[in-house]
Image 1: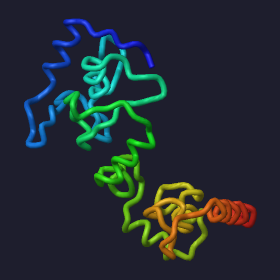
Image 2 (image 1 turned 45 degrees about the horizontal axis):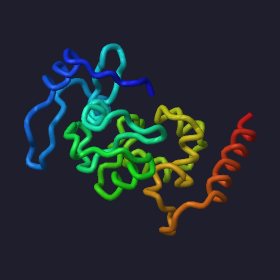
Image 3 (image 1 turned 30 degrees about the horizontal axis):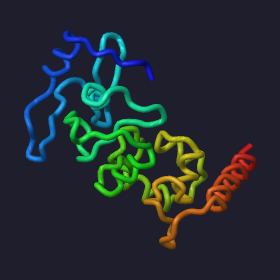
Image 4 (image 1 turned 90 degrees about the horizontal axis):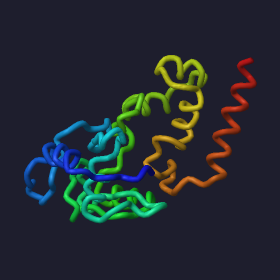
Length: 181
């Protein structure tokens, strides 16, 4: 990560985009935001998450190998008391516990809805034909049908997927590709 060098002018611009406390004590970023809801800040030509800038102002540079995570689960919160340096694994664990992890219909890059997924799973046509109908790849269709993607972390039997199940889904897709040629 590039070294963040706070200056008075940049800091004034940063704080002008922070609104008052919420009921949770969050300081909310009112500037530009990503599709997933995190604040974006141009710190003198370096684009950085607004929460990362706030953390750096209060605590100094983010330690190598770590990222800035939210204790509160509010993606546009910049209250340094709600931020901590942690790992990606810790961040995902926090999101899963708080119910803020973006998945399925809630993910900004999702090309299909849960309704589409249910219909794809019932569809008996070839992966390629289904893929064209929904504007996704045949690989995505395979992964949806085999519950590698859109699985809610479980297979149809309610147990976590194994590496073997993922490999089986890949083999089925490879076989179907060969049959369509």
